[in-house]
Length: 276
Ligand SMILES: Nc1nc2c(c(=O)[nH]1)N[C@H]1C(S)=C(S)[C@@H](COP(=O)(O)O)O[C@H]1N2
Ligand SMILES: [Mo]
Image (cartoon, rainbow, N blue to C red; front, top):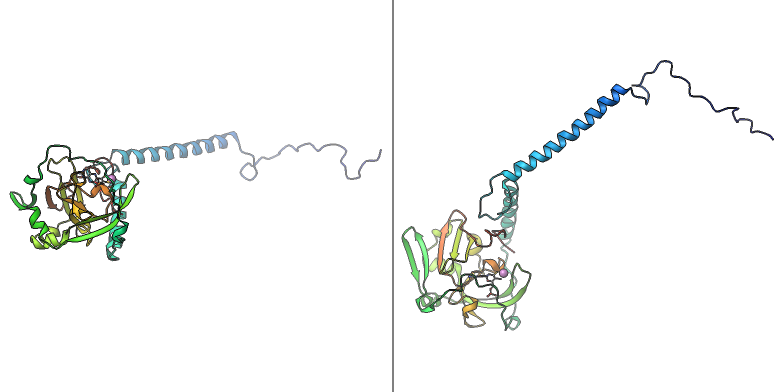
């Protein structure tokens, strides 16, 4: 049998390393291996510690409610508030109007949602709108006074955070007309507006620019008829730039402030701003 010429007769033995210099080659001494393992493990521990204490700091940071970002801890909330501000500026700088529809498209069977603050006994004859101008200074407005102001109507797609929407037709007094007529302009320079039901069981806070949006109305009509009780008679808020949760039914009190008024759903984890 012939053998290939270049086939070595025997497998070469690994030559003993006469003078091992492991820093140049691949071989490491035990000592070096230990040191490297130690460094790698140390870095791992340090990373874990950073992650843990970072999380602790976030988790234990103060979390005041109610805010737009209730539920988020302080550093995150700051970021969220910045984002909100950014979109608000963009939104208003474009003079954004919510899309409106022809009257025929408005639902005849208007959807009805939750009734918090509407459950107790209520006599519409006793109803008056109360506006707090200053501590102890309450302006009282009747439904007839509101009806005497120019009527504004809107047909738009009402959106609930629960996932439904419907084209609806509402009529009432534009909030800015109400502010002008009752000389509330100074108060409307404050940042927030709060509204509650007569029993104060449902309450909302609004950023004033959204309340002063040209499509926001204090509504007393639905489909050209007086508001039915379950839709908020005698007066409800219709604020198309917000989700349904901010469209308070049966308004009794209005306040102005530079701090965020309490908000029922923000206290339960929903976005305070709840804009569309
Ligand atoms: N007083 C009061 N207003 C309220 C509510 C409520 O429970 N109580 N629910 C809000 C929500 S979540 C929605 S979607 C709308 C629903 O209005 P509607 O019942 O006229 O459809 O009202 C809003 N205003
Ligand atoms: Mo809703």
